Length: 616
Image (cartoon, rainbow, N blue to C red; front, top):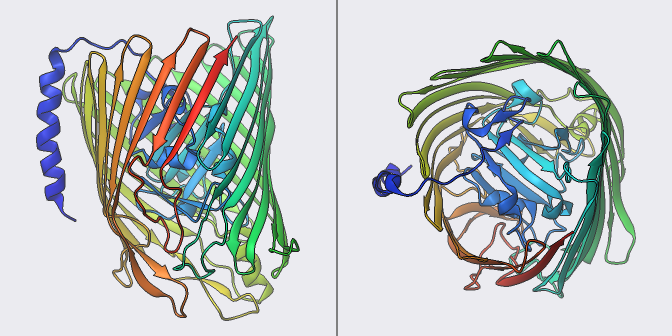
């Protein structure tokens, strides 16, 4: 890894931040974060590498999907195989996509069969903020959280008015049309929120001649819709009952082996919770949540070729106890029931249940900030797993903070991986495990901050597949991975001008072969600027991504290939006609650069989106 890149940028940024200390301080509310400890905290008091995509950023999303928004954050890269209707992989700190746990309002939505997440059916207009926890989070949330946790917090609506309405509508390149409408309010203890969204596009040609399925003969379009609903009632300040529902659907075309194929995916999450406060310092929350995913795949002849359905039901009892002014202790009990059915080339009908208990301790006392957590998961048919984490930050001065963390993680095999081995009378594979250590230093002043994080993650028992054992092959534990990296972030405010940026240096390696893990760049640079006039805001974003390794699947065995480096420039603008009406425009890939996230798969090229929002 070339640390000279890091040293050069540090030399530029630290003087910039020091020189800006005389600027006028910016009055800004601190974000509230719940993902880092499962209880609400100020972002400034969170221990570890945590960031928030706030509402202001989401309002500039335009045509961007949730995955594309995430890719603009430090420590995250993505890989796509076409438009929003195709699978998207999220690589956090160099780990694989299956090592990232994704939640909607704290409810797990990773598929029990494919481990995938239907990111692109979630409309950013329905989201209040996205919290990102980097590093293993299994001691808080269990399986999958080897690389980190992404918690998508949806809008809950207005809480200070009987009723408020809002809507937005936009059009863009590739005949893209998006719209959302919602209303919310609160009265006499009753709160409610309802949002509906839809989108459709003619799409673009998703594959080229390098793809193993051949070049697309025409554009691959899609249509999607989603609904978000919340209903709550506060019996008093100490007792509250809430219900929530989220449902998304996306139906899209993609180029496959039979021509232009298609798939339809529906993802749902709904649940009930009761939150009660006793004795002033004890908050108890009982909840039951269920997530469902159904998917059908069709050939170019409109014949169903595959389908699956998964269900995950979660029962949880969380108790948060405040120990004086500076300490919090959380005790958690969980039970999960998973079910999966699949039809097509491979049939499956499987189920699995698990139980878990966790303790989480947080301290914020003067210059000292600490968190420790311990969790035990017992999964039917598998070895139990115990994971833990400890983190400590120390404020050297009111501007300088240093800290370190150590945490462990694990990932269970999916229902499909278990079923394939069991049907072939082969022993099930062991869970993947990880050990993550990181150190950090941060400098914060009235108008900005600089933060440097160094990390190392060792992953063992990686699950792979081979054509052996049974008719569907077999899964087995083999490789080890070692990932080392640095992330440097800064933000700075100069009156009406704001600047931000990040540098990621990542070295994810297969320890058996010493090969770099595919589709992950060694270096990623990001820079952004935003300038505010009276009613107008204009912004620019720049990113550069280094070369990545991939494979050419047109031959067997697949050949190693290299994806070229690329740079992108995006422009944004927003104009407030009044407090009620706002227009915005986003222009991605201004210079129409050609690049690939996966070998043989195109990206959308230069594209523009214009949006109008109104509030009543």
